[in-house]
Length: 190
Image (cartoon, rainbow, N blue to C red; front, side, top):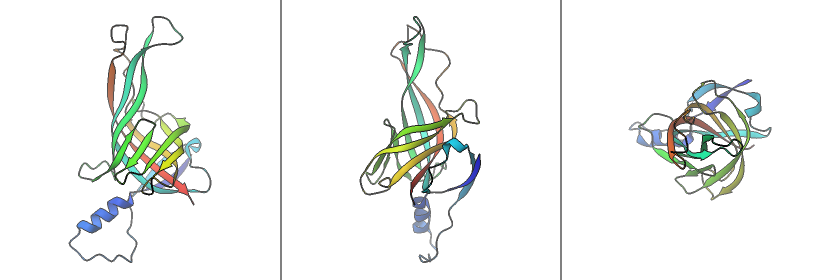
């Protein structure tokens, strides 16, 4: 495992600078907020990629009650999609920067998008949380925030797991929405 510093979103720094009543020295680089997170080796971004920015997600993981394909008379919650808002951090006063939904897709307020596919996963240190992931970008759309993203890490997950009960032949086709939070680290080619 390797410790990396996670860099806060540049958008948040820009927003805070714009809201300040004190004069802003635009020639001096802003000091981003950093958080130390131990990330498993299998979730490290590929060589040659650098952290572009980080966003916090708050939303739900959506599951459907379905019949098990391999075991007769067994029913289970099957993951369908995420549905979350993206912010600079989990501080509720932050400006919404985009959204996260099926694909999995991350879409910025500027209309740019990145669609990912899971490359690797690792159990969350929290037993009731969804796994941590490394995703590769399958496609990018637009020229804004997500245009050059090549990899995405989902880390520091809270909640989001499917319920252990409540799915049976009587609930077949039912939907459940489990609240979750996560940090997404977006990487680009160096």
